[in-house]
Image 1 (spheres, helix red, strand yellow):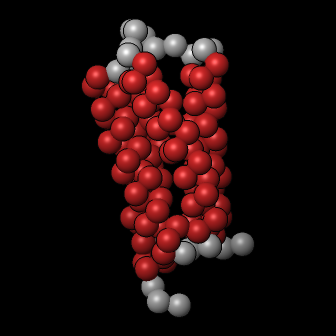
Image 2 (cartoon, one colour; image 1 turned 120 degrees about the vertical axis):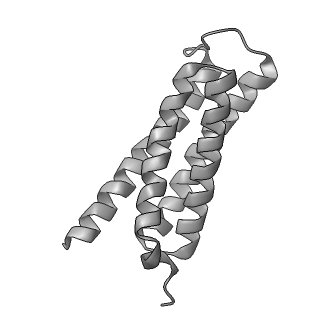
Image 3 (cartoon, one colour; image 1 turned 180 degrees about the vertical axis):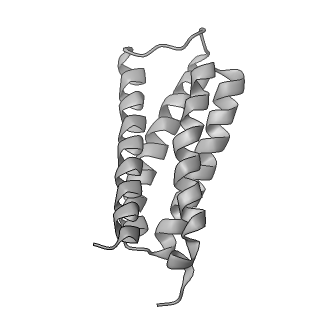
Length: 124
């Protein structure tokens, strides 16, 4: 397997783990096994929980397109990563400081996609 394919596989596996963790955090927040640093309104708690679910599910659904170098996988993952970064910045500033950690994996995934964008956007 060529090095570029191995790196792509590693990025996809990294992203899959990241999206599964997002879904797990949704589950933990709905079962009460995870709590916020400070009390939040029900609306904020629901928005945070369902954003975790949406990011995780959408990310997992898009990963085959990323691995197969499809434009829809590229653009969808860029959109999910942009939402993730915006959401985590909002959560970091207004909900709890640990939300800032979610920015790093989304930035890594986006960085990889930007570095390899020609692979996705070439007419085949």
